[in-house]
Length: 329
Ligand code: NAD
Ligand code: UDP
Image 1: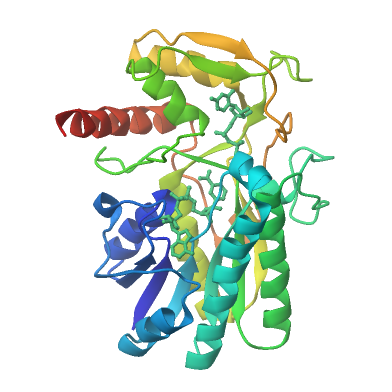
Image 2: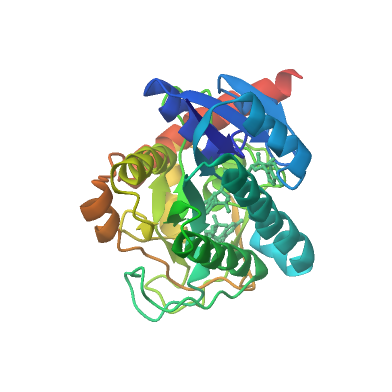
């Protein structure tokens, strides 16, 4: 019996595959490599293809005894989604519909889904609770919220059991430093800070210092990617135990400003990180901090790497390894 991981060649997917393999699970990966990388494929079996290709997906289900699903495959760049909302809904919602069709056809019930803090939009309360308002401010968040709703209705109809995990800011890397985040183009703060520390960028831009926060820059809740990976295993366990569907935030409950992240990275890398002050990035809320009490209580999840030093140290190890490899090519 195997776990199917969609998007398993991507950042969070590949780290979760490592955690599943460490637990002795048989892991099948489906990824079209549009955003993922061959170097990140770690499962027992890999299928290169698009989730929206129903025939291809049916073949994957026929050839393997799939027992449960972890569903990462999606487009996830806010800015890109503003320019291409149709493409985002097509890929994210379309891919999920195709997957759910196959699950139903082959009698697979349990699915853990990658949702996001972007479903909340500009929050009214900090820390954010799961039942706070969901009013996304971009098509990416809206596509993820649409999927959450689809999962709920499918679960109510008895077709599936699901757990939607709303991640806050995924960061860090596998401890060995040989697997980590590599998006192209990169939009996430920590890898950009570290690319600047490595001299791969002349400077980085801080997107606004006129927010209503102590130093004027945005505050985010950074969560180590291996803590996220662990949460997926716990979510699968819970679905196997009680089959109860639900939605959970995943964050550390601690906020760091853009300036604090840059200063911490300077300290850890010992390098200069030239910055330029830029305009606000459209759609960026001032503060996003999770309450993960529900995940802690109901999934038994306890973030292990919950300090910024560890997150940046692991990401730094990985950035040096990655650019060393890229420079050799
Ligand atoms: P990623 O882009 O690194 O990984 C996504 C993977 O899915 C890629 O390998 C891509 O090739 C694959 N993919 C996309 N569409 C596909 C399709 N139609 N068929 C097959 N494969 C497809 O992204 P990530 O940062 O690892 O994020 C993983 C998931 O977590 C996404 O669903 C994202 O929305 C969600 N998420 C990420 C963050 C974050 O901070 N990185 C935060 C919240 C939520
Ligand atoms: N950010 C920044 N410069 C960059 C990239 C990001 O100032 O080059 C800021 C961004 O405005 C946000 C925070 O860093 O306030 C985290 O951004 P990221 O894209 O990593 O995650 P998001 O919170 O948008 O999902």
